[in-house]
Image (cartoon, rainbow, N blue to C red; front, side, top):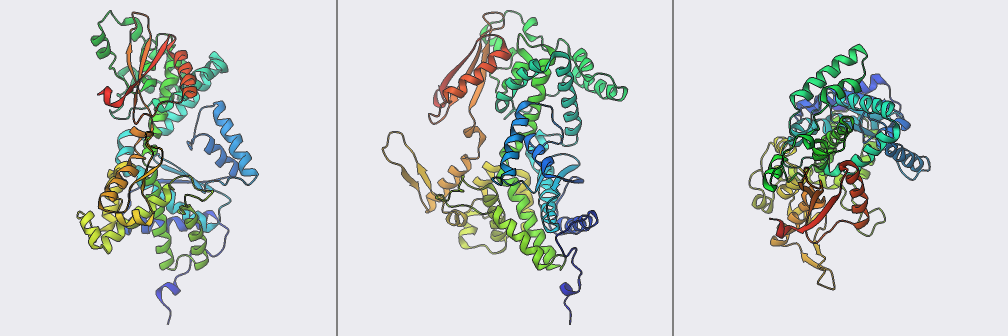
Length: 505
């Protein structure tokens, strides 16, 4: 007597893929993603690209359109050399946070791997992009393609009119400040009425074949004239008018630099807009990859249980999956910190375990969801409402702390030796979880540098303050180079003072 599994014909039986097979596999994945896991995704646009196209996407930070800059070519040359000599592999896919969600799959993938990466990217990452609060609040998935097209055309027009060297100089400076060109806490200011009108004129101009540069420059001419219109104010009123302190250095320079032309201000705006668009990804690496890895793992096993993939295909997928979630030991040459795929996937699996088979320890640590039969809902809620730092702080269990052999190693400059300060006991579990979560908090791992004053009617010195935490100062060589770029954009002297966090409050 045949079982239901034995009577089902597998979706494919061989390594070669065709577009017809890809469509069949996507439909089967979609059924499980929607009907079983309850995922909510953007419409999918899955494209098959070559190794060279994948390298090109690498060099442009994974975005489908990008303006030209020498740094992208440098990254392409480096990655291509490593790939051609066998010292570096390529990702099986790249996925874009956009609506529709674009997934680039490598044409060299076997059919089994195409199935795996569709489940991972087109459904796992896609669901996370659409539902996580950071991406909802800080990115415009529907508008990113139009903006990238505008940015590419605008910078190309600037190069044609003002010369490659002039544009490159502004881009070099903007890229050097890119990490300090985002709004971390407050919401970005909305575009002005003039900017919205200019964007509408720009769209209309594309249809008529007019120059994007002319339209945008004419529409925004004089918007950066804060320096010209400012009246004499005392220190407190001046800071209030310029909304100081200001954490977004590129935004401040765009609005207040005494020397930048309108086209240069717009280049700063382009760079900071793209930096802001990518900022949520820096805060959700563990969660995003953990979500996608859990989704593909669940889906490929469900496909196998239904008889839709063969045992050989499953083994090929599991071989890749195991490599992705492998956590090297600290003395392994491959060790480079905690693998975000390993930690993220383990935490997703652990949440499901706590829901389905909780121990007394789990019930004590996670009374809100331990034993909850709806583990899918618990996971979807976590994917939607947390970032890496808060997710680890809320959901990392003592069970996983023991499994990953985590402990806290304290390096006190006043003590001659390293000290193991937290171990596997009740107090230690809480402290280890807190310490690990802090390693994913950008407020601690990126320098807090803000504009604190700029007297535009006086000597025009731009004053920055670096709030120092745990006595970690900026590297002198890097600081000097970045300050050169700041002075180039500001046009006058720039000072940077360091203040201990305890004294800054």
